[in-house]
Image (cartoon, rainbow, N blue to C red; front, side, top):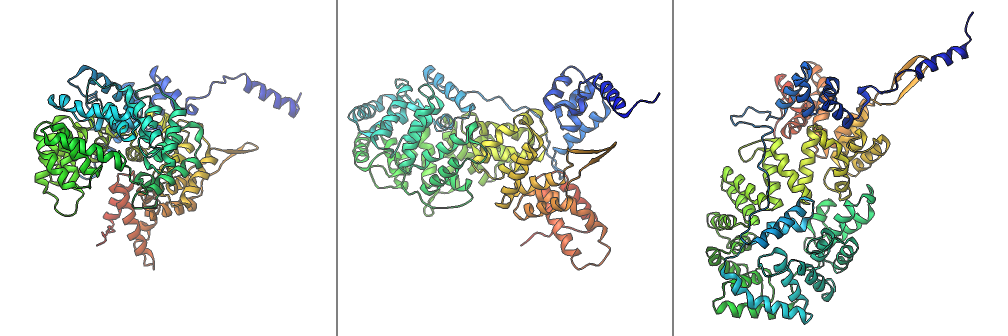
Length: 637
């Protein structure tokens, strides 16, 4: 008896339905594989190692006796080392000393700085800035500051905005134990309202958003920042743009963020202009001053009179006012003259001021050998920003070991720029050591502190290594989305790549493809790189016709075209991909005489050189293959 076709089809479906519906490990996501690997599942660990390039997965699989994982782990570790032979020891994965809040002599000051340190690690920039600019004072300064602080409190009660603003700055950095940090917000908000947004609004808004000195309040923080932005305070406009960019409801194309970035750029924000890839104005439309001209003159006369009577703390304020032109004519050399002797008396801020005041002057700037000891003195006294300057001066004076020591100390003191400089130096190997794993620690710290440039550098570092760490894959989308909203360099292209792969979010190939093409046409080399990767990738969708399955392959010609566009826009990854794709054609045709073969070979060699110089995978291999065939990169003069 022959079964009819419908009955046979039903039997097949029934038998399939009775099978185990548990999906195979090969179709599991990375977090699921991580859980299976933790239970000593060799196959799961192997998939983590091979498919997701996870070093922890490779290490676990190696312990379970997987030979392939053992070889892959050795290969991945070797890939992290410098391409060129180097006599220096490269300790990939060496632990970095744990950061901790700097110890302060006064217990109340130490407690306040510990809270600021925690807020800094949560990404609140104002807390990091306060730590980096903290200026330890000698014991005699407390008594000498009493008449100035009393005058500031009295003026603030008389509704003088400038007095409230300066008083809040002392209360925020917690230089004096008798001042209450909670009053810093109250006085900043009062200065913002009394000045009608002219100053202190950026500080008051960020304090309200971060919960510094008060409970967190988003609505109040936004109100302060809007008032400052409407008054052309570029700091307030940029802080408000960052807030909306981080908001999960903002989306990828937040027009509100773009508008605020443009306003901040018009008002003179370098960061906003760099984000928009344009320069609207070279000078701020309104200089951001801590005091109005009339009230500033009264304050300058007060501190100048006390300085002439021998009050060294008042002399420090005189130097600060002269450097910024508050209440008197701006005179950086007079400020340096006042600040230099105060540095030897233990005023860390004076050391920093003596260096910075004259650093940007074109005429009459002191020699580096004169400025360096002042910056080193400030760093020794515990001023984080002085450590950053001392490291930069040591680097200019060809002392890389000292430079990195200063950057490291400044980073531990809470200066995010020092962390970023240390991390970038480790990425490039310009200070004696090249270590990707160690660099990521410093850059991560600076990125969590709100420094956008550090986020860009560490993201590019992870993308070059294909986001090998599983933890980074799980949060890749959450990190890149706000950076793309802020138009940070190349971040929208990397976001499209992460969205396509589904790292930290549900994969959406169409949305990723649209985003990559849009940003590529706008001139983003990273977006062209991502579009090329998508065009070359094997499609996951499969068509079934009868019993034959067809896998749709990517468009190779289109992918190479995108890589070429990205390389022209200066993206090293696009250059590496283009050189890898075109190199076989060049090597095969090197024995034939063709009109454009020589020029093509030079272009491929140049692209491989650019990709290899920034450690993009595959570029160094192509470079060596071309060199073996007599095709080398000729640097432009």
